[in-house]
Every structure is written in structure tokens, then in C-alpha cells.
Image 1: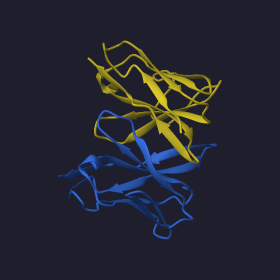
Image 2: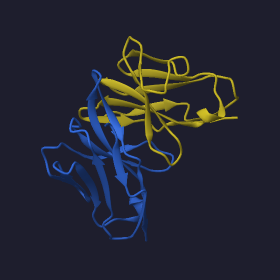
Image 3: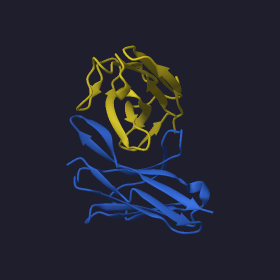
Amino acid sequence: QQQVKQSPQSLIVQKGGIPIINCAYENTAFDYFPWYQQFPGKGPALLIAIRPDVSEKKEGRFTISFNKSAKQFSLHIMDSQPGDSATYFCAASLYFSGTYKYIFGTGTRLKVLA
Amino acid sequence: SAVISQKPSRDICQRGTSLTIQCQVDSQVTMMFWYRQQPGQSLTLIATANQGSEATYESGFVIDKFPISRPNLTFSTLTVSNMSPEDSSIYLCSGGDPRYTIYFGEGSWLTVV
């Protein structure tokens, strides 16, 4: 199963809040899990990434939590700001049919209110 | 990191015509990919662009409709052939090593009328 399920589809938080975006997968062959941030009219930009041998990774206000046994990972945005309003995609890297490729989640549209 | 430039950034095309999108990376990358993204939707992989050989297409995408070239490690093109309104979308080029990180261009916004 090559799907990555992402939720929620959209999210609205107040400035300073901590939005949490969740992703789940079935295939244990996935071995790299990046998050991308996309602003309207722009291409996706890498935000933070994690490997399954690590349970948590922080970069600035962004934290990934990884639960290998549950096959779930999530993005937390600390002290969210209106400038964080964007669409966020989780992804998972898979070696399949002789090559690596990314499988993307369906995306979460985040709006941070001032 | 890698900086990826695409052109055109936006175009309006007539039904039945073809358009070639160019992708230039500022450094050599292991792999290059082409994605399609409907506004407000997720990214769908069209194909992996292989240097010096035929691209590897995902299910639902065929070479006759989306011919791809990759003559070297920093450049690739995607052609959308015999366009119909259903081909209106954002086409994204990406490059890197998916065992680690891939980077995206800004996208080419295509509208077919």
C-alpha cells in the first residue's frame, strides 16, 4: 500500500496556537518522511524531515513527532504566526520498482489568524 | 540544496496544441521528477526523468501524451501534447535524491482554452 493519509484537510488557529497535522502510512518500506510548505503560487519547499529511527526532530518552531509502531507522524508548529498560513504536505520516500520516489499526502490548508 | 528554475511560469494554450516546459537545476542532481498539481490539490507524480534514456512513467501517464527528455544531470523538459482543458494544471519539476531530499521549482501554470 503506497498511500499516505493526511489530516485534517484544513485547520484554523489563533496566532500563538500550536496546529498539529497528522499523517499515517501502511507500508513499512517507507524510510524517509519530509514535510513541505507551499504558499499560493509557489512550489513546495522542504520544511523538515525525519527518519524512522528517530522519534522527534525540532527545527526552530517546527517539530516532527514519529511513532514507528503506530505508523504515524505529525507536524507541530509552535507559536504559530500569520506568516505560517500555507498548505502543508507530508510525504514518504519509498524504494519501488528499482527507484526511489516520494508519495505525498493530500495536504492541509492552515490559516493562522492574527 | 538545489535551485530549480522552470519556464514558462505561466501560459494559456489553445486546445490541440503542445507545450514544452523546461527545467534547469543549478547543480547536478541524482534524479529529476515531474509532478502535476491541480490548484488546491496534492502532487501527483507523472514520471521520473532518466538521464540519457526513456523516462519512467507512473500509472495513468503515457509517453505519447507527456514526452520527457533529460539530456544531462541538470536539465529536463516535459511536453504536454495535444492539450485539452483537462490538462489545465500546475506542472512542477523537482530534483534531488529522494532517499534524502528533493527540491521543487516554482511550477508552470498551464491553462488550456
